Image (cartoon, rainbow, N blue to C red):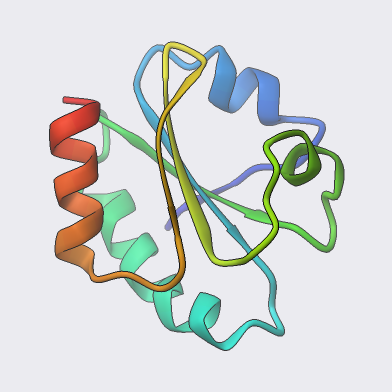
Length: 106
């Protein structure tokens, strides 16, 4: 399962992480977000120990999405050493997400 991050845990879990972190910005009412949910959870198992796969509910945590200019969901942001290295907006395939992680984080 993907790690649930909040405005309160974002700095510790994402920015200070010693491994790259993929954050899925989503909301329960968003159809494409719900469709991507199982893929994100699968990837959490596949990349365990190498990349931290996490999710942030934008309705419950407005501060962080605002800071990163999230205007559409789902948006995936890949962080490495506390910096944004890649961003994808919209529902994308698992292979697209894997490609982003492999090329930018590993």
